[in-house]
Length: 462
Image (cartoon, rainbow, N blue to C red; front, side, top):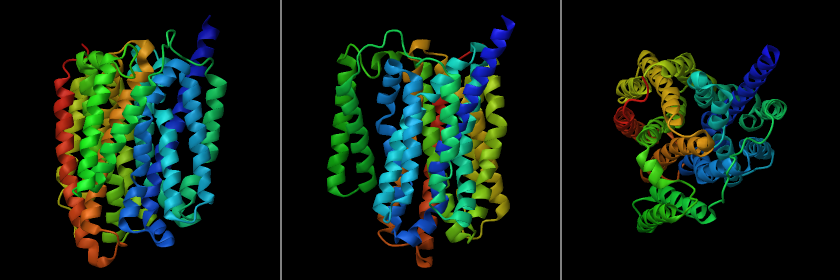
């Protein structure tokens, strides 16, 4: 019996390691593009607005399939949906050898986003199922660390790859390791891991979800022109229709009534939405700031941003473990406030800002997010039944990607209105600094709203 238990433990550990590998590589590949944007702009003659879309379009792709992917995972099997997403992301990344224009590169970024939604709609549920109740927080901590580490290591790795092998390498370089992650999951996870009572798939709800998220996203990026104001109104009407349809459906995509009653889950989602809204513009804006304003190389810029990831990697597993023993609300809310202090440190940066100030700000941001992510996820998943883990993790991932998407839509709006359809030149650097400072001010507000929602969820555990 002990040998069987040991074998299962080793198998679960390998499965968790493969999940961590994939959830590191996919965000890493998508965020690495940010550091390569100046070189992409030069080679493909892309203007400022096109560059901002390259950093944003994948977020829209991640959002529109997130909830349908989580529901399909409960019905068809988490492993099947997860592997489909990982394989499609790998193939989409290899298409980078084909494009000769910024428009075709935008298509690849969209395909990456759509594929990633299948991965992140299932990964946390699989990690939670692999762990015991006593170790769930630590297991989720490893996956959360992998995601954040991938996001923040992306610019560093992207800088090295861009300088050594060209900007296309930030797309294709992770694909061999993704193939390895797929192989490990096939070998270590048996069965499909699906719900015993799958029910029916809500096609109408899924279409409405795709419609309202798309309408709101594209409307925000084009304001204040009247067609986009009209599209914004349509988006809100579609959202109201979606909520009504979900409440009236006996087998909805999301049980709105249950979600409203589950205070821990819905406040955890709101906290995650605003924390990721605060984080989303950082890599994109700092990539431009460090390379254009501070005149740093892609590799040096990426190494500086890596400070966030190092702090996150140090504290996320510890915070996850602490949330298995103590009230997750206290730990996660403290993380929000530390994160907010990082923005206070960075909010007024300009061309003369010292490296010391930048380093302190980035360290605070990484530390704060490290203390927030794992406890927030642990609190949310401990509040739902095991047969709904996939849809619960899809909701958490949705809140993250919605925060990313709408925050970046605001940045695209600022680029449209202030920088316009022209390549970034020295005479536009003051406007770029204004966009950066205004965006950081918004991020500070987002992080404080996240702290309120994190605290107001109530006590999670003894």
